Length: 218
Image (cartoon, rainbow, N blue to C red):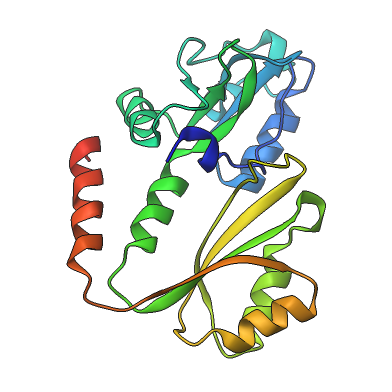
């Protein structure tokens, strides 16, 4: 698994001309304290909430940025990306292409949480939905799942590698039998591109999670 598979498409593209207040509003919305700043496709660094609150009237061009030289490449193994972020105490890490152009951002704790939850011992199922980015609404998707007496226990959004206008939404559901849920999604014209079922008691899953945490030295 590589870095670009874990990009969070909901992260805004902040520009130097944006205001500190604008960035703070996004941080509050996303529950983050760091966001990337990009100018004409070039990654400039991360802006921190602690700095913004001291200069609310400033533009981001006037703000001292952090982690200007800390980023990972889009095809880099995701374990290496997470370790770089953890070693530098970053909540998010920018991903760039080989020509240093900005590709997107990974939210570290979100990725770790998804990986951990996807390897839990509890039984359930996982669905992968493909959709246009403009059609994404986790509230609506949760409503469809709950209409079938089930719940989403974890979710993760990433870019569809073959069409950048689309996203893949991976959701873990607390039900083994998801036949009705799939039928509901198809009735509402969601494209279900993969499904998996997880029974309890898989030691291999626990070993993979233990290896990840050991690798990151958390």
